[in-house]
Length: 220
Image 1: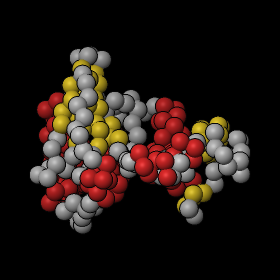
Image 2: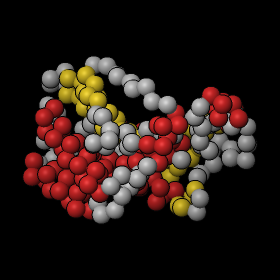
Image 3: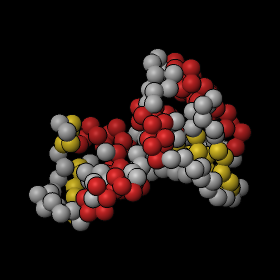
Image 4: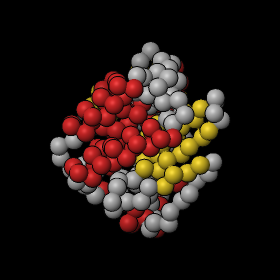
């Protein structure tokens, strides 16, 4: 299954919706209003769903479902984007899906489209791999973190990524260090990729950079 969380908010209507979007047919879709409804899925099954490739038909169907839910539930969908422009983006995304994908890859196709609505509380958030209690103990998650960067705090200054906090046992990356690349990929490339998935109201950029720095560890 490919779960994402989509939230929308309007100060005019005082409405807050959270959608937990999962691929159609084999996946149920939960709409949460003023609350969170959690399904009981085993960690093993949950992780298997994240790793499972979904067909082109399922992916395109999910795009259609998201579009219909936005049209039916978002109180002010066209504040920053035209109706025809948004429809064209959804149509273009559907055409671009030509092969099966897992959740991670699908997220990077779908999230930039949602971000183009330019409303800070309308966004997709990927759900990451879960660990069983046994795995957390064996991997010493509490000590080392769930991801390579989870014990580090980041900030973006002048388009560059810096470490501003460290609770890591590994002191080879000191506070103040600039992250130049990760796994051979330049940090500028990574920041551009991840920034495209984040939203803010209108054309605000400072909030996006703060959110990007805070979420950077979760992308790995």
